[in-house]
Every structure is written in structure tokens, then in C-alpha cells.
Image 1 (tube, helix red, strand yellow):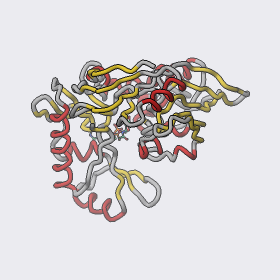
Image 2 (image 1 turned 135 degrees about the horizontal axis):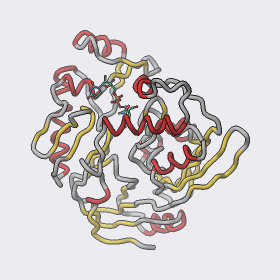
Image 3 (image 1 turned 180 degrees about the vertical axis):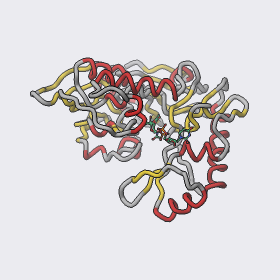
Image 4 (image 1 turned 135 degrees about the vertical axis):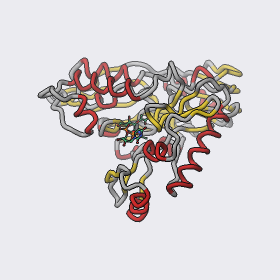
Length: 332
Ligand code: EPU
């Protein structure tokens, strides 16, 4: 059991803010994880994946757990489908590359999302009309409070837009995920931007779709290794009918998508842009010039500076459009 003391978390979060964790571990197996959970039962716990979706505003007086389980293996296959299990610590985009290179379809629209395999189900990552819930069969985890193993079927994960049982309860450490992928591929339009990028190609292949997504994302989104950020900072707001109509009175061109359950999704990036906050910089923090939904860190190590800017955007959007922006990113 390898638990370290006083570890600087700056390298472990993509915003690169400073924070010291009292205790830190990287369990390599489910058994090691289980033993640690039982030995440190009374410590507050925080689970870190790639650290692409959280940042720190203060030190953490507890145990940080970064799952270290690796490996990608095929569990079963027939003519049409393959079931693959991947360890929580696997890099998400490497996993997508693995699937695409084997001709397995289902994850390609989620190319280049900064994540680990274990973090992907937590907020049900998604892009270009696909969510990770569409390809998950099972999630294997260990319960934090008991240290016992647990398995979740797709239904039991209670997936929603950028949400799941794992995010809601924060009581599980995901150790591996089982995916069901298709051995055939036929491009279906789910997102106009992607179809534009593929224009001129009669029937795009799996690698062509992956490459197109990589091109779109590279053009629009900053590389966290170059300009620290956490991807989309806010969720796209879901509005009820009256709220949607109120918004359209103020902004007749606001993008509106049907979100099911009588809800309508609008674009947080659009609202931020219309509030005058696209490409705006304040001190060491700002919104990205090419995408208003991305908050970028130009050099602060103090998470408080980022959270102050976040609140300023929230106040501004609320004041102008009466809509509350909810962060997708966790602020500790
Ligand atoms: N838009 C603006 N201003 C901007 C950028 C976008 O007005 O600066 C408007 C445009 O009208 C555009 C619309 O917003 O048509 C949607 O923009 P985009 O296609 O970039 O998608 P998004 O809704 O901003 C979501 C996900 C992304 C995902 C993309 C593509 C959320 C919170 N974000 O962004 O996910 O890559 O769709 O599918 O749902 C992430 O979660 O970290 C992430 C990057």
C-alpha cells in the first residue's frame, strides 16, 4: 500500500492551479484500492482522473486517489459486435485510437476529448451527437464507504447529460469500463459541423471521421498542455418552454435544441458571447478567443482567481438573460 504525504496537485489538474493534498495514492489494482479505502476510512476522499475537469482553490485535507488500473482487453466478440474492457487509468483518446484502428465503431465522435477511461462515465462525456453512455455495457467500481467491489449495468449508471450516479453520489472509484462496439461502420449525420468537415467524401470511413473531429477540435479548442483549461466550463442550460420563449424575445437568434422531457437546450457559449465575454481577459484568466465556453489560464497558480472570473460570467449572463450557468467543471 503506497500512500504519500503532502503532494502538490498542480501537475494533476489541467488548469495547473496549486493545491497540496495531505495524502495521495495511485492504486494499481482493485485490491490495493480496497485496502487503502478501508485503512483510511475516516479521511475525506477526492478521486482524480486525468484532472481535466476540476481545479483547486485551496489545499485538500484528505486522501486523493488517482486510479492506476491499466489495460485494454477483448472480452467477447461475434460477427457484429465486440466487448472490450479498459482500465480506468487508460487515456481516453488512446482508447478511441485503439478502437478506430481495429475498425470498431462507437467512440470515434468522442476523439480527442481530454479524459481517462475511468473519468468518462462520471460526467457522461460527449461530443458531436454521441455520449459515452451509448457504448457502455458495464462500469466496474469500488464503493468508497465500504471498500467493496460494485458493478453497474448501463441503466444502473443513471446517465444523463453530463451526469451519472458516480457524479451525483461521489461514492465510487471506477476501476474499469466495459464497452460494446460495432464491427461495422456507416456514417450517419448527427452534427452539422461534422458533416461540413466531411463534405466531398461520399461515404466517410471510421479513420476519416476521427481525423475530421480531431481537425475541428484542434481548430476550435485550446490544447490544455499549451494553454491550461478544462474544456467546456459550463453545461449547456436546459430551459423550460417559458424560459425558452423569454430568451428568444431577448435573443431571437439563440440556438435552441430539443432536449426531451419538454426541455430545450441552448448554447452556453452563445450566451457568454452575447454578454460580451468571448475572448475577454481579466488578469491571468479569460475566455478563449475562438470559443467562449472555454476558460483559459494565462498564468495564475491560484484557483481563486479562476473561480472569481467564473462567478463574474455567471452574474453577467444571469443579469442579462435571466439564465443560471451551471459549471460542468468541479471547483474544490
Ligand atoms: N457558439 C457561440 N460562440 C462561441 C462558440 C459557440 O455562439 O464562441 C455557439 C454556436 O452557435 C454553435 C453552438 O454554440 O453553433 C455550439 O457550439 P459547439 O458546436 O462548439 O458546441 P458546444 O455546445 O459549445 C458541446 C460540448 C462539447 C463538445 C461540443 C461538440 C457541452 C457543455 N459541451 O459544446 O464538449 O465538444 O458540444 O459536440 O455540452 C466538453 O464537455 O468539455 C466539451 C468540449
